[in-house]
Image 1 (cartoon, rainbow, N blue to C red):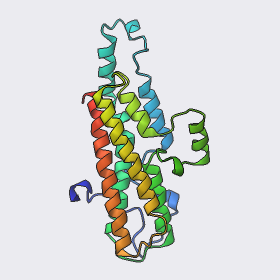
Image 2: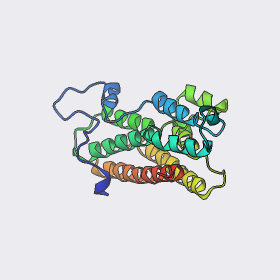
Image 3: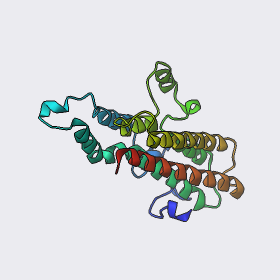
Image 4: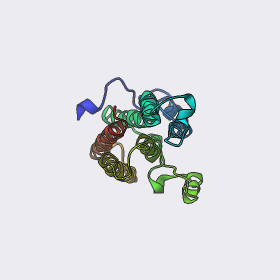
Length: 221
């Protein structure tokens, strides 16, 4: 499990004795943090590379192969939300395992906020009222689902690669939901409570890694 958690990251809270920045500032300074708007924008841009685009207008033969090649070239943008969520989860893990006590209420609030951000609006109960309203109008708000939809847009709906990635995504979403619920009412100054959260974070990272592999398989990279 240790290999999942790099030592270069910084915990999301300030060390004891240093003045704490506001929660929003703490989360915004995390490495590779990606806002929902940026994540969705990247996914929608890449989703525009679909079989319905007039690739033949560019004088290119084999539009499907051309589109597949474009997706591969743009894959780092498509995978960016996954990478950002993984880095945030690693920061949470580091925060839970590098200090024994003196946690404040704001530390728990920061942790919960960071976990919700990492879930990318894929846990229905944790969505804001605006995002929840959008989802009820038929708009897909789960960034991870948008990522998979883009990666698999050139495959048949029943392709085994898609089905496997969808199963992994369902596991990932359940993992995020359980993790966020687990933080309710915990005492971060109790080692046993911190361990429960840390173990759940490692599990979520594992599912996130598997989901990323599934997306890459759909992209053939």
